Image 1 (cartoon, rainbow, N blue to C red):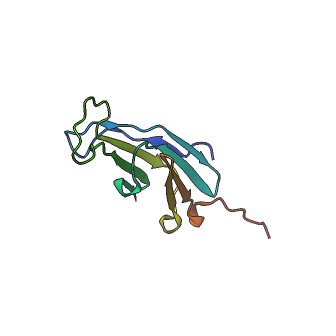
Image 2: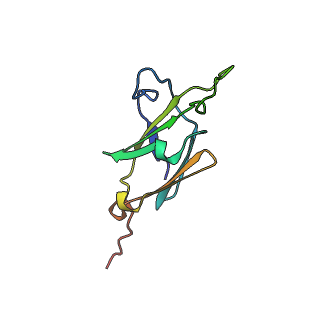
Image 3: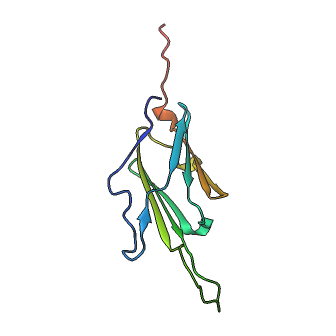
Length: 126
């Protein structure tokens, strides 16, 4: 595989206008069988991540919440709510039924198997 994906426009479009958005740092690796995508989303809980694949565009949206504990009054605050938005156009069809995702230590790991119909085939001459 030479190129697997390309970033799309408007990376930092936030769902909520009052919450700033950032393009997360990410890494994509791949073989002819699958893409492996790792995205840094520090401080994000798994229930605050959504992953969508539509028309070969992978969209990852994650929200970091920075609410202070109940009853506390922060003296200084540098952390704020933040949306992470990443959109990648995949150059090969992915088998949506076999996609997997995990979130550990602020890194979202995705495995996106390529559809069998998109894999190269060798044709024997008879």
